[in-house]
Image 1 (tube, rainbow, N blue to C red):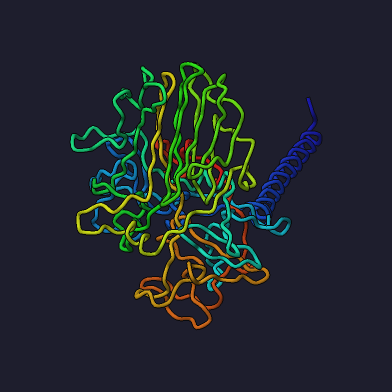
Image 2 (cartoon, helix red, strand yellow):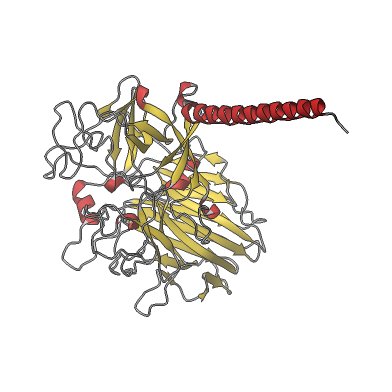
Length: 507
């Protein structure tokens, strides 16, 4: 048994160890906090998306809807009116907004990335508001230092030449037009795809059980209808803006379209053909099955502009086929891979064949955008049809998407002063200046609408902005790269937990 002096010594030793342990723990906590603050200040910081200027890529405060057709979509809560929104997939009007208003997406931003590498076009960037440096904005970078930017026909042109989006950015910017997997059962709703007699309708597509006569093609033709159910061109409709106090932008005709579908060829004799038209230009994608001696081809107005030897559709199994006309380039992919190897026209960095569109007069453009008489459909600026020949073939899960359309805004409500960088009013960037636009073009307060040196007030309801309509390099905060807490919170009723299905990289 220890003597009293020894017991006292042990107690002193234990108190010293406890004190040292406490101090070590406290030191660890302090170091952790310091590292966290350093990490936040210099590496990664979390931000909340406050508004819908980047919708539907990134959500601000919003309501959520699930249409009868099964499509889920968001409607911005800022600027809502009593107007019931419509589904972007089928056009059905929704019921009154749900009671729950969800906050914006929470994102992680790589800070000071641009101290080590140059910003790239199409990056989603966070920057300090040049007029109010304590405010952070988030937009997509479209113009780089030294360039002259002009938005023409919804596209971005630099120094008079259209620029093509990087694959990941383009995938983020496609917006749904229609998907056969999501069709309502309402009796008055009309199917969008109309089939020739040999085709048979199935749950999510069509089957050609018997090949048409030799030299003939059996067609599926897409007929678009506007949100009122009437035949119309495909337009830049944003469900996210439905019912907003600022008008939605569904007045501009969009012909940059993508079709994705799953195709199953039964034999090597099967041939799939996809035909598209944008105003006066016609495109044809011819895809024979593997084993065929026929080449895979892309034709522009009847002239071959790209080709690959042999067929590309696998026989006996489904293949994902993607065709698109976007940014004056024609895209053809099978199972995610580009398939053309010989090109008569220039190609994009990604390998898609490009073309110069046939000129369309202002009078013709006006006719496409507006009906000749009330209630009468305008002439169609697009065509889209899918054909099969040679042997039985099936197509399933036909989905059509449209490209983002950058709107030519005006600095005042009467259209007397064009915005910056819009068609007919290109804007030249100086050294260390960047030009940004929101993905939600009709509801984004961005470089197009920022005031000039005169400090004039832009459209009613928009903030005043003084100075050049640019983001200076010194105002760059970083690149948005990950949604770590999706706007909807949790769909699984788990308190304080995000919905992991909404985790995603930002492109």
